[in-house]
Image 1 (tube, rainbow, N blue to C red):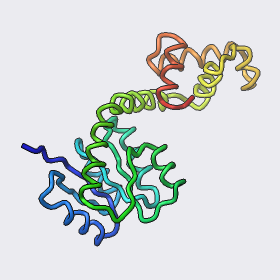
Image 2: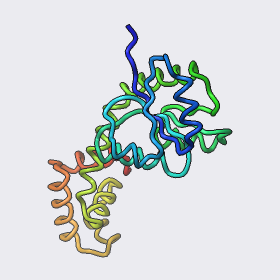
Image 3: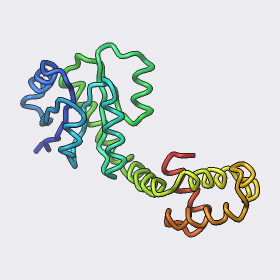
Length: 199
């Protein structure tokens, strides 16, 4: 028995949405169409794969939402005649695959299967990144500056000189930073910053 997979299609073009949905009728992929990224964010699906037309800030908006919510779904981006640079940017931002429209059901099904395999491998790291980012967001601007200095291997005195504050003030910010991040020592705070992709 073939398991049906939810494919959340985000595309502002109604004709293209209809064409994709029609091409997949009778397949193992169940298409849920959305006019835009914001509509999908409001629904906040918990399973499946996202097929997103690469226009405007759709991919960025969806990735930001997933990082904030701590729930990650793989994204397959697509566009008509995308430039290599556009494809690379989408993949670097988090898309697991990129298709050129028009594509057929076989190509899309293969991409979805690949996306699910990658999702299993990446989900843990994406969730760690989301948790780390939420911890970093608790910090004040000054505490983030102190964290950057610590991660750069600077002493309290050097950080103080750089930020034009006293070493004692750096110590206070450092203690507050560790407390807010739930870190017991500096190396743990640096690890969290690395997981949050800040350094």
